[in-house]
Amino acid sequence: MIEKHYNYTDSQEKVIEKIIDDENLHLNHAILPKGDRLPEHYSNSNVYLIIIRGEMTAQFNDQEAKKYNHHSFLNVPFNTKMNIINEGEETLEFFIVKTPNPANYKK
Image: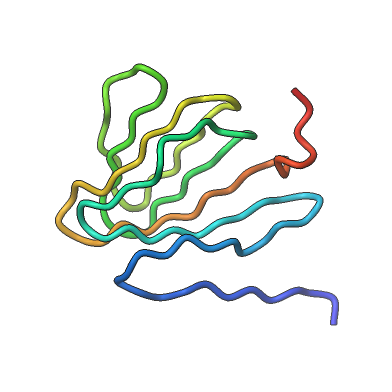
């Protein structure tokens, strides 16, 4: 078998899960119920956020927080302070794509 197959969780509850962590890519999947958030942190690679359900409120560095809805893709540069919260009415679900894998990122 040439291809690799990956699954991710389908839930209304909070989920932060690692899907892929190889030499090429780091891919996480996140589900945040209404009012939940990720801890404030700095991006450790080039980060792409792909929102597939709900609405994300995100603040990057000291910029004003903005709302992004499903079907949105965000690109966040390396070493950017990130604050992500679900202030919407429905569950927020998104993928976090880090490329290159942070273990291989050259500053």
